[in-house]
Length: 288
Image 1 (tube, rainbow, N blue to C red):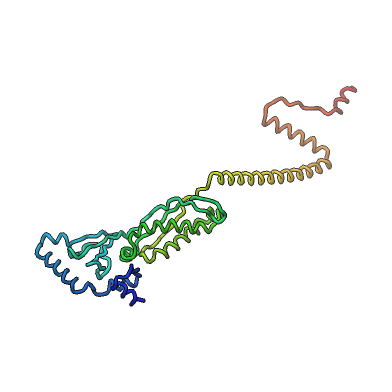
Image 2: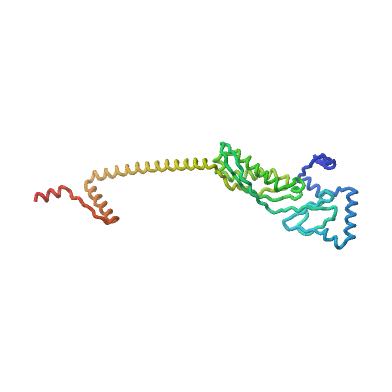
């Protein structure tokens, strides 16, 4: 396998996809620029020596703490891999370099119109956090790692949500985000990119579906309210039945309850209260 890749690189047949082991081998192997390449490098060094000290400013390069520089000498990755942070030297005319940002990068996934498993159209967006883990792979294996990761995140979001129904999308956001992170991390491993975190930001439903869900929730609450009211009526009727049995055993309890009710009314509302007298008392007064 390695021998076939080496032959393809030497013959220049098609694009060759490097793995982590291939990059390590390139970084640790001796330079293979050939005799002609070494002559060009020697001429460049002589030119630098002749034009000193002006040419020294073309040789000295600096990369920041969060950056790495991939140096190409006559089109080949220079031995030692990524340079930096700090100061390094290049040979003019034969060397060029590419700076790679190693910090965590954040981007928003644009809202995606997704048809769920239960045939509901929803609009879902999210956010992805990733960083370049291997600068050499990010330069050698892909043209634009950032743009490729953004496009892959959009397609992954659509593919993952297409296997879920609406209830799962609304309730299992963490599981969906974890599934997306695993899928993206596996796909971008050959690009030298590490996907650190994926989050689902918002799930937008169609207006008609929102109204239907609101009506369903309202009907469910009304049904529960009716059940609770019916249970209260049943409990109240049982309490009244027990109270009637107590009053039937003692007729004076009804009069005491009546007086207690009048006392409560007088305390809460200051109004005129008509106190009816029993007819038996009136009949006694009329006889006298």
